[in-house]
Image 1: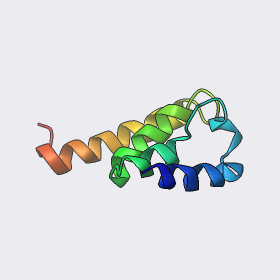
Image 2: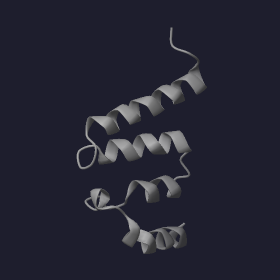
Image 3: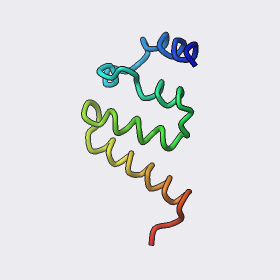
Image 4: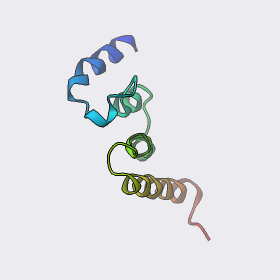
Length: 77
């Protein structure tokens, strides 16, 4: 896993500025932990909402959470 982390960090020059305050950007975290797509997007949008699109990012995270909920636990009543 150390070599994977090293390879991911080599790509840090392409990390958008709104992730620069974090020790590890969300894409690297998601890849290192093999997190599924929808769950990864929740992480991404929650991490960036204060520095990028505000409430739009929170709404996107909520939408992905709703999709995860429906897929794994059925439709809400």
